[in-house]
Image (cartoon, rainbow, N blue to C red; front, side, top):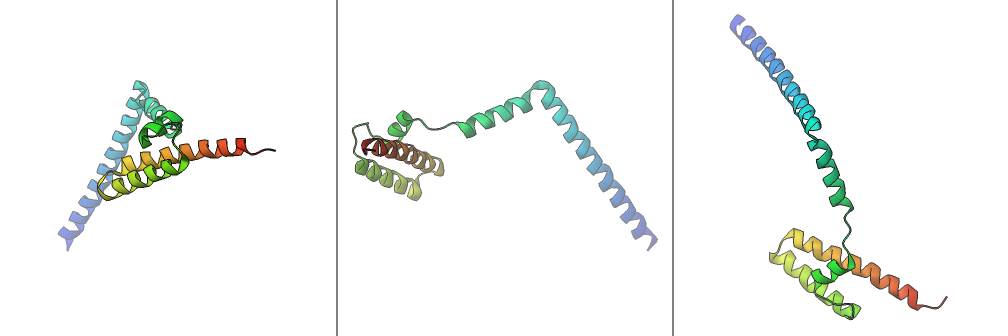
Length: 118
């Protein structure tokens, strides 16, 4: 009985020491990262990526259409590319195709609203 109690105490003490060491190492890593500017750079890159909006030109390249392509043809191209990437493509490409359609849809709606008389 006494040996089990001693063993349990050693495990608890060892776990506490290990937890403190992990916390201390994490703090040191954060300190080193902030000194090197790595943390700032990582945050800035994340913000840049999140705020990057697809341009109309990039959207047209992704879908393989021109400014003269009718909206119905753009939708057909989108459906075809989206389905192909859903079956045996990649989620990344499928996402790009979807973003391209969203971009061109906004452009199309903007042109449609401009055509109607007020």
